[in-house]
Image 1 (tube, one colour):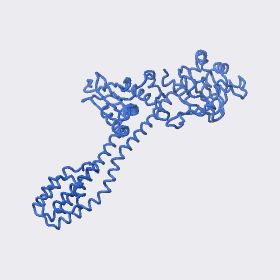
Image 2 (cartoon, one colour; image 1 turned 30 degrees about the vertical axis):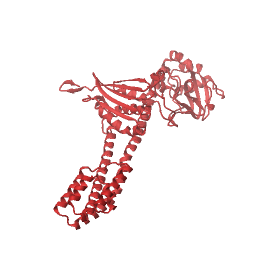
Image 3 (tube, helix red, strand yellow; image 1 turned 120 degrees about the vertical axis):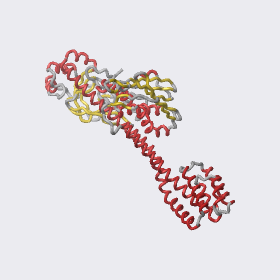
Image 4 (cartoon, helix red, strand yellow; image 1 turned 135 degrees about the horizontal axis):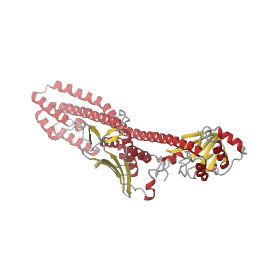
Length: 505
């Protein structure tokens, strides 16, 4: 099974261009090759391998062949094994991958570089397409000649191994950066979705508030001119206090609203009051029992003014409470995102609260779950010990696993997240009730660029990044899957703190 370095060492190329323009790697250039001596001189001045002994460069000349490609032609594609090692003599080729149905350039090789299959690499096919940007001349060392090259050309092999290691580091950091950007994109989309509802509610309520305040002010002036008695004032205050105790308006269906308004109109008519106040009073949380008590105390000639003021007062209080509720929701989301991204945290490992990180991750992905009507649950063991690590990196593990679970779960399915202590480890489980992972590909899911998602919907890097981050935290990850139950299990060592000279868990 190819590892990350093997995949990376391959000629990381661009997305599938036009296969009809791809030439078999065995086709030699139509341009007459240079003499062996001239080619040897060119290799001696080559930026990457020019420092190798001349006899080893002569071995390359004797066992390789030259190829020429014009701009737009494809040197290698994922559907075909890598032909061998490519020494770039002139020109420029670029390496691309397809992401979200769009071609993205990852890197490019120019004259003086070496690409393709490098010594000790077990890669078979490249993960993308390599396209020629400027007319290029290559010295190709066929794949089956590489074992002999490592035996005959020790110094050259040493140079190329360092090239492969440098390239592996470059692509590792590039992939990690790209996957982080992808996670940020998911986070931004989820956050926008979650913020939209409370922000829209605040806008709607704020637009309604001036009209309600004006109605309350008008009703208050009418009450002031009515000259309420002490008993009437106390009854009005009691009614207002009842509204204050339940500031958030009940959510009723349109049918329930119509029925309540009709019943309120009947009550007003029975007390000799114009039914025009029915809509305003019906919107308040006032019960008919409370209205009956108010009507028994307040004079009939001022009862309508009292009801209009009470209704306006209750609506204003309700709107203010809902604006506060929406603002609190936005504040909570921002707090969750700050915790998720660990913007203020040091990049150095430190004790991390796994439960808090899982809760923050669920908060930013809740919108996606709601879109698919997926039920999400989280169970965190009480007193769960901390693990030692980098909070932002651990959260990237959780967002990848939970996001994959949401993709795998069917509409109206379930995703369950649990964290508990198991001896000296904290074990996190992410379970979905999707179709499961077929046994024949289960060992490949952590390979870089391997994905079961449709083209443009997955890069094949998420689980590879997860595995790397788990390894970096001295942990372990495994998967158990069958139809209707797929479970990813991450085990991380508990942080051991130094306390008064003794270890404390």
